[in-house]
Image 1 (tube, rainbow, N blue to C red):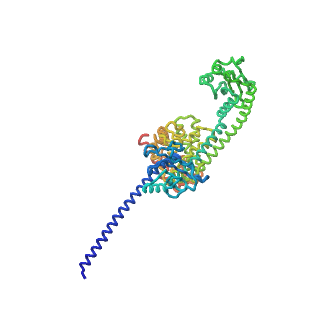
Image 2: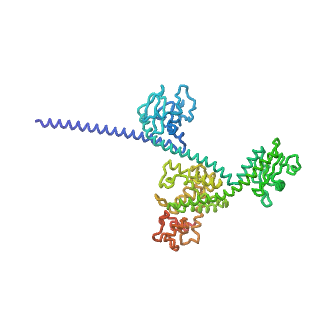
Image 3: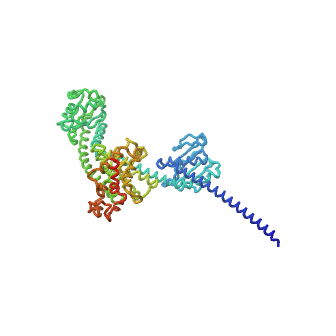
Length: 618
């Protein structure tokens, strides 16, 4: 047996196997490289898709953006996006894009009325559910070839007319079809939420208007004056009150600025008008009568030819004057009848209004009670609303605001999160980060809260403070994107306090910041998120309190004093009976019962860092 020949033959086979293995390895390498490149391409496509979409822009605009993305993959005259209408069980056209005359440029049209060539494909406004497809496929409608792209079970994209599509584009569209289905579900959910919110807001505005008229006598009188003017075809009117020995113009309709200024200064004329209705609730003056010439010349200059004067006993010592210009004739009997009706209604409404104001206060008390309940059921929000109010009032006083404004700020801060009651309880109780859909829903709490308070009180300023407490100085807040001085002062104060409490208050998923860290965070946010002046006023006020001789050598206060912890928790804590010892030195304290730990609690961190203030000479 020739061993050399056998060895040579084995070597040959070994070389062949090794060569085949090398080729296989090279092929596998290139296959994986191609696969990786394909995956990278798919990832880039999906990334572009998510970058394209902005949930706050509305469903139709986002569908149009997705069609634009599709247009980069395949060229066609039209791109249409249909959404399933579950009630009608058909697809409804929601967005259209056309290829413009400039190659590759796309322009949107939501109405489908954009001018197009006469032989172009005319997309239907709806499609029967039988047109649903489950994969990207070419379908001939009549004699027009179209590409159908399914988007889950809720969407359908039609592209065409389209004769051919290459394999690469087809694969990319399949990837988009699969990934877009998840995205579309989210967009539809957000749109549904937005639609519901719009109904709520529209209803809220109507309720607010009714509430404002019911609760605010000035608004009620403004409405009544305008109704009377229309009913008797008068030219305008004004309403004034006698308070002690002075007369105050309360409102007017139709008068020019100069006449209003003269009336405000003309006590003698208002006294004459007031005297006409001392005995009779009605008095009529016509130009050809003697009493008309007791009035100053500016009445005639303003075009007041005839006057109807009415005493409003229900409004205290008040007088309502309607006037008719030349060419407008007053029918005295008819006017008297209409004004009598008005007087009867004013008397009734004022009685109701008094009752409503009592009801309003009771309603506010209920809202505050519910807010406290929500706060105190969660250890991490114990005392939150009361703290919001107290800190906000302190800042408002430092800014030397008017007392009635401070009162509104106090209540707005307390009820700033009341709108959460109108949202899902699961959403309110959720720990950790919100999804995009949940975040959009949660953002509605400011508007819902403002509506609740406005309906309850008719106080538009109070409601505005709640509405805008999530606005930012740089204009990137919500719901209105207001910036700087456009944001009501009360809202800017609440925003600072809310941010501060969020920093010093822990959560189950994160520890609280120390006081110094929280103040540094406030300063970092000043000028972009928060009002810089208010941040500085707050910090200066707080530092002044910290350096007061009355708290030297001891904490600024107990948990109940600094954190508004209710007595039901405090009385069960051993610290409650040891006021001469710092709470963190008492064993078995109940810090955890109100969401705190001694290491990060503001009661301790304030005390432990107070010496730093003295060192820097604050």
